[in-house]
Image 1 (cartoon, rainbow, N blue to C red):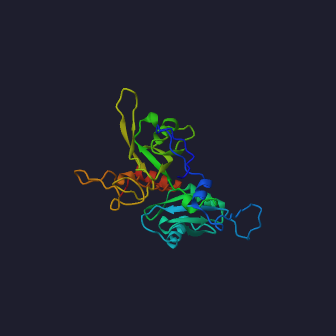
Image 2: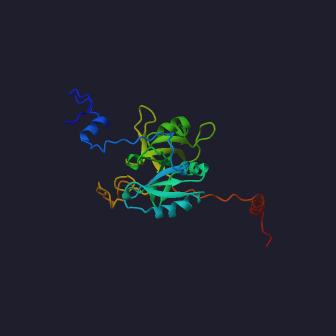
Image 3: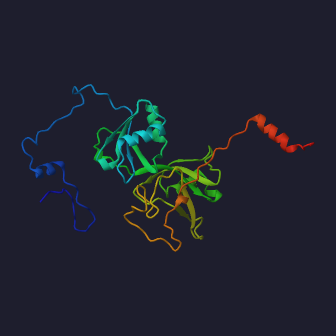
Length: 288
């Protein structure tokens, strides 16, 4: 029986630890050839390979297999054709994982900080490159999004209370507030990292004081990738959902398009001359 190295007192309070590498190797009954060890030492002379200086690892969160050529064709223009861009696939075919190398650290930082990125309607998850990891060791479990919580009381539209609200949705990275820590507009806004393996939050329940019942406040997400309207998770549609749910009396599923924040249209700022002309025109009467 394999050793575990764990400490189980029979009370269910602790779980057995995984076998040590030494125990695992012993149980494999390695041959003499298999037992030979190759040591890699930092100061060994190696082939003159171009160093991976600025790189990200990524994953397309799609149920279908995506070719590296398709990833390259989609992300190159989306990222603004960064200098020196090279994309290669890693991992198993259906994992949709890739490495993107850049010729500029500034481009790499810009792309990493400008998430979310989309491949069609599906999320592109990005992480910093780590040459010590195997493809199977890389975990893509978080996606950074800008989220809005609508129609909050004025006393919650600030950094202090607002961060507590946003922490119910994900890990808060940045609050969209002014220098005094106050938010303006119709909603509270923050950059958060959400768990892609969990259903997305449709809103938050807040209790204004101890005597009041909690109130529901709707959440919306900017550039929200494709999600399943049945289970609320990313990476598949309701037609492919492994846990389908019954529709309500109106034929609706628990999640819908209201989770996607409407895109803000930029208003064209008029020139000083046109503003004066419009003002004079609107205030004067026609002699015709």
